Image 1 (cartoon, helix red, strand yellow):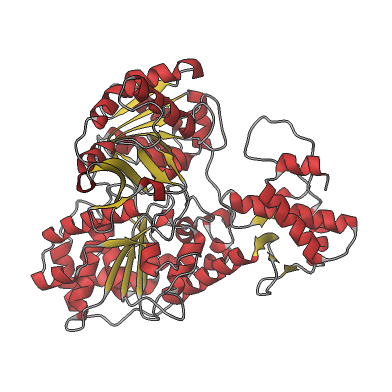
Image 2 (cartoon, rainbow, N blue to C red; image 1 turned 180 degrees about the vertical axis):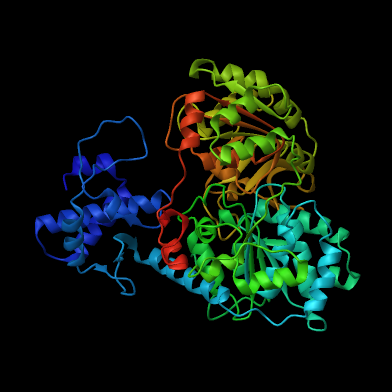
Length: 620
């Protein structure tokens, strides 16, 4: 491969990996070397962009493209499919599923790095094993009595929260998906009470977990509040844990690597594991969690299938939910629902996967009423109804959604100062880390892009310079009071993980020396010396991806001034649903129109492994 062409398309990491594969494969013809080098480079680049595998069928015979738009490069065209497949199958470094080779090529022409094929296999086997188990022995009369206490009438024709609870009590694996305010955590609190009551004199050990420290802190706060309202004995309430941890801490990270103390050989000592914000969990972590369960453990996943996928490779939660139908169940489970609730639910078609039984999608939002602009806008975006979305944003009927035509690059800084200076002036006047964190979390500027004039990096510089000019920040100081920082790479020694956000503040216990305050599992803060914080960035503004698992009173979404493949329906939906009280979109109609017509797609074979090729993407 010509170095000039290679450098135009692939990172140094991708090129070095491809070089290594060619070297490892040994002597062969130049055509076969080129075929292998290109495939290895592309699969490495695909994983870097969040895909689990490379779909050769889709790119064979096509010019290679990159995420950036409009950049001219020398033409690089992929081989024809049959020629490419035949060439790869004859290489010593390429194997079939189940073979221990660096690259795995499956029957549907998907090329994997071995470890990612293994993660998919591991996760699918774990999930299907749990989903296929017969309903567990339960006290039906006790369930019926508990359902009446915990789930009084909601006004819905079908109470999907109640149905999710029935499934979770009767089965080992349950997925509860729903948008903001649909009551996922509310439901799981009642599920835990039902399970504790079922256990009688042998109470279950329960763990609560989330992907990030911020999400774990939110889960802790919500469970504490929910427990107070439960109509059950104080003994049952006492057995529901209040403290949630990160998944990494739950599994027990071993410093210096990505392995964990708890695994298949040393399973977690819990009977019930609840994971909130599961859409943020990448494929490797989800696979490691599932393999660390006891043979009798229950796993409850909570999330929103319509949000963006995880930052790291895979879209495990979305793939698990992608069975092709919503809220359809087996005849056995449908009969149980009818017996307990006198309600009939849709039944699966013959031949559908047992997994669809395990997935319940909550329909009703209790946070956003029928007249909520945020709720209506989220629905319009989720359903790609551009005209309705623009009418909501530009109209005057709702006081919680707003539209602003994005300013040109030359005047963007002026617009930022006009709109946000007052907020940051208040923020820098806070007198404690608690007050600073509380105020900081009330507002966030979310960017679709990371780089470029409308990207988070540029906006962070703009806001920091604005605050320096106003005297809020000492010029030239890297560490200063109220500087918000976000971890950009896992630090297993400090137990800080990618996406964790902290605030710099004077520590009164050390005479006012600066410390970085990070929310601690279970509440409070961890104080860390700034010099110990390694890879991080200032985070007045953040990308929408990094905002997952967080909520803010007010959100401003900054879209670029021209269309980008990064702007998708899921990205806009995720940004809007971070807002609790108001959301303002800065953009152009063209950018929003194209964004709502594009969906975020992660190449993966997990859907096929779980549903036998019958997921929604494979249906007519």
